[in-house]
Image (cartoon, rainbow over all chains, first blue to last red; front, side, top):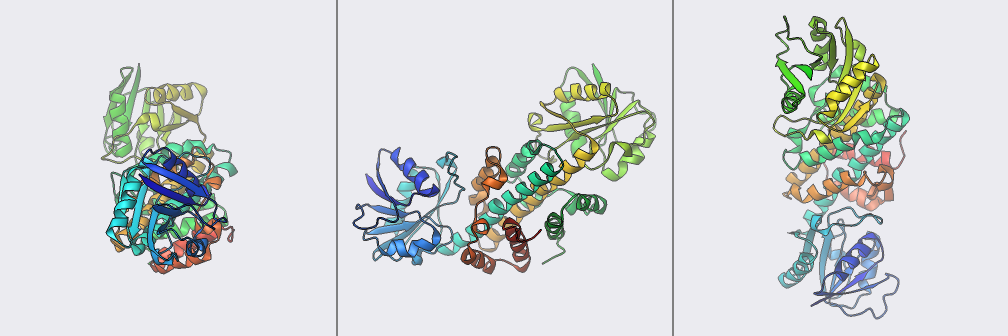
Length: 232
Length: 232
C-alpha cells in the first residue's frame, strides 16, 4: 500500500486525486493548500499548486517526502526539510474533460533511487508512459510543450477567427487538424512540412496575406520566413 | 456508372485514382499531364496538377466537364470551353501514408446544380463529409488550413529542434500533441487556451526565452503577445 496526500484543488490536483481513488493499492487523501497545519502523514505528499506557491507551501509541510507537479520549477525550489521529488505529467488538463491516464507521460525526478522507484510504482498504477527526467530536461520539455500545445492552440484560434469572419464553418478543418497531429508519429515534422511557404509559392502567399488582418499577417509572415529559413 | 479521368500523377491524383479503382460504380482512368492529345472521354475530368498549371492544362481538355482539386484557385481559372467545377479535398496527403477518405472533407463547386449533384455522388462513393463551397469560401478555408496545418507542423518542428538540441526524446510530447488537437472538437480554441502567455506568467516566459535560439525567441514573443492581445 502507498499512502498519498494531494495538496491543491485545481485541475491537476483534482484529476490526480480522482485517479488515485480508483486504485486499490493506494490510499489517497486531499487537502486545500490553505490548510497546512498538521496535514495527514503520507508516503508521498504531492503539491499540485501554482508555480509561485510551491516554495511557500512546501516549506510548511513536515511529511518526509514531498514532490511538486510543475514543468517549470526545479526540484531544489521545494523548501521542505527532508526528501524532495517531482511528479510532472506532460499533458493538458481541462476541468470539464476526463483524463485518459494511459495517454499521459509521467516525468519523474527524485534525489535518490528508492524515491524514484516509489514514484514509478505510483505512476504505474495510473499509466504506462514513464520517464526519469531531471530538472534541466524538464525545463526543455516545458518550453517545447508551449510550442506544440499553447502556440498550436493559438493557431487553431486564428484559423477559427478567419472562418468566423468569413462565415465558413471551422469544423470543416477538424479532420485536417487531426491528421496533422497524427502524421508526426510516422513522419518527422521536417518531412511532413507542406504548403505554400516550403514551396515558396509567392502568388498564393500574396493572396493569403490579402485575406488577413494586420496581426494575422505578422504571424503569417514570421512563420513563413521561418519555414523558408530566412530568419535565424 | 460514372466515368472519371484523373490527370496528374502527384500525391492527390494518385490517392484519388486508387480510391476510385475500389468503387464498382466508377470507371477510372488516369493520364499524365504532359499527354493531353485525344484524352479518353469521361463524365468528370479531374485535373490534379500544381496550381500554376491548371489554366494551361484545362485549356487543352476537350471533355465536357472539367474540375480542379486546388484550394486556392478559383473556378473561373479553369480554361476549358464547356462546364467547370471544383473537387477540393481539405486534407493533407503524403506519398507514403494511406488516406482514410472517410476523414476527408470534400468541398465541391460547380456552375450548375446537376454538376454539383454529380460531384456529390462521386464524393459519396469515397467519403461522407461533403460540403458545397464556393471559390471565395474555399480561399478562406485554404488560408485557415495554412495556420492549422502548415504552421502547426512548423511549431512541431521547433518543438522537435528544442528537444534535439538538449537531448530529450521528442516522443514524450506526442500524447500532448494528440490531446491538443482532440480538445478543439469539444472546446473552442479560445476556451482551450492554457499556458504562461494567457496567465501572463512573466517569470516562466523569461526562463523559456533563455532556452531558445534568436529565431525561436522571435516566434515565441510574437505568439505570446498575440495570445495576450498586445498586437492587432
